[in-house]
View 1 (spheres, rainbow, N blue to C red):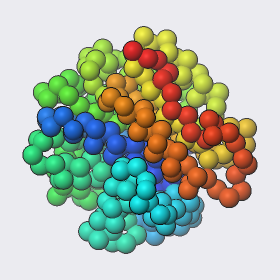
View 2 (cartoon, rainbow, N blue to C red; view 1 turned 180 degrees about the vertical axis):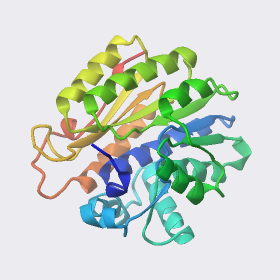
View 3 (tube, one colour; view 1 turned 90 degrees about the horizontal axis):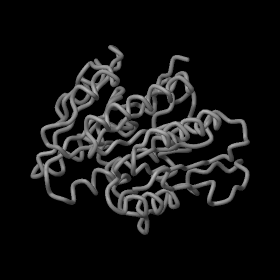
View 4 (cartoon, rainbow, N blue to C red; view 1 turned 90 degrees about the vertical axis):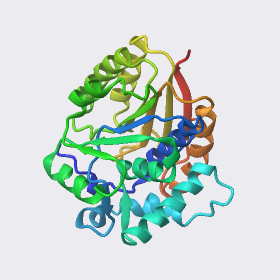
Amino acid sequence: MNYKHAYHAGNFADVAKHILLIQLLNQMSKKGKPFYALDAYGGRGLYSLMSEEAIKTGEAKSGVQQILDAEVSEAPDAVRQYVEDIHQAKQTYDKHVYPGSPWWMAHHVEKHPDLNIRAEAFEFKNSEYDALNYQLYKLPIGIHNRDAFEGIPAVIPPVERRGLVLIDPPYEQEHKDFTRLVELLVTSVEKWPQGVYALWFPIKNIDAVELFYKKMKRTGIRKQLLCELNIYPNDVAVGLNGTGMLIINPPWQFDKNARDILNFIQPLLRPEDAPEMPQSQAVNVRWLVGE
């Protein structure tokens, strides 16, 4: 399968991923010390929700648009910040833009110039790299035409010693991709044990996801937190039932904050035709491996 994120920009999975990313960046910034932030799969950086691809799927309507239309005055801080930053991106670029993960990192760096955060993004596909480099070249983030599997082990540990690596690959062949990602995480944690690693993954082939969990448990890596948001039950055959993030070495109390975030946004993102499911299945934040 040849994955192209332009079809899915701003969908419910993007919403959950980017709000959790905001929460991670905010909590890491609270220490007031420099850190390194890497997006290992940068994509295009900015996406148009009026593109042919986005219009064809209409996924942003049931994703980011649901959050923008909602009342968020009582929402967790990261949700309110997400809405404010989306509006700022629309004012800066155009009203149809949706920013990808590298933009969220660069925007965070811009807002905290005193912290000396160093941000970088990798993108291996030449066409996507060219777009990423062109669209974000003015922002404080280094852009590199580089493969994540080669690049991550090569740049860690960073000189800052503290940092976050976001890994959100396309998952073109799930079983094979999960296996390679487990190996990448093992290699990375061996080189940089104190790094924070956030791996995004789709929840659609539950067998592949459960096997991934089993393999991660066997790695011996400690402090593995799972954050799952489902909009359809696992036994309903749809293109994407849910979205997940595995975080190694999350900041203190990130689990509580993630649970609050996902509990708030899940009802907003759940389609009207989705069957009822227990709240424990709709949102599941748990330690796959503890201390």
